[in-house]
Image 1 (tube, rainbow, N blue to C red):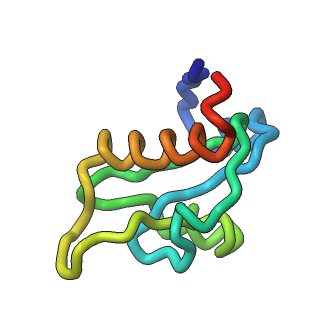
Image 2 (cartoon, rainbow, N blue to C red):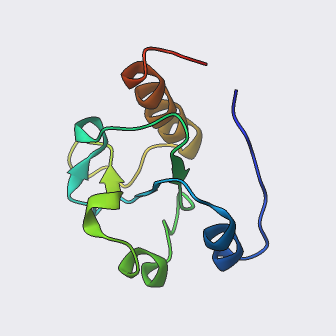
Image 3 (cartoon, rainbow, N blue to C red):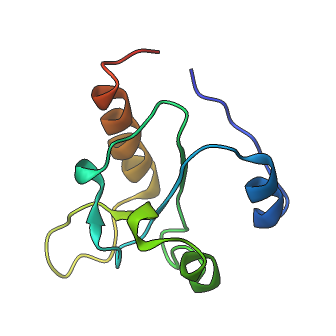
Length: 98
């Protein structure tokens, strides 16, 4: 079961969130499949056209910035597909315990 929360500001999200936070970015150095996810981890996705604001990315440890490998010269994967890929990997790593 997913828990979805809407926050007006990113700082509000950070102040209320007590889980590991992973940010997805095409320029990140960590492949999402090399991470060890927990079921209560949080994942942040940017818009398809702009990604996550660089100011936000710069405030996070590089180890918490992840990417999905793509064919060269492809700008990005559709946001819905990106969410599905990473959510499914998190579930797989945790033996699909819902």
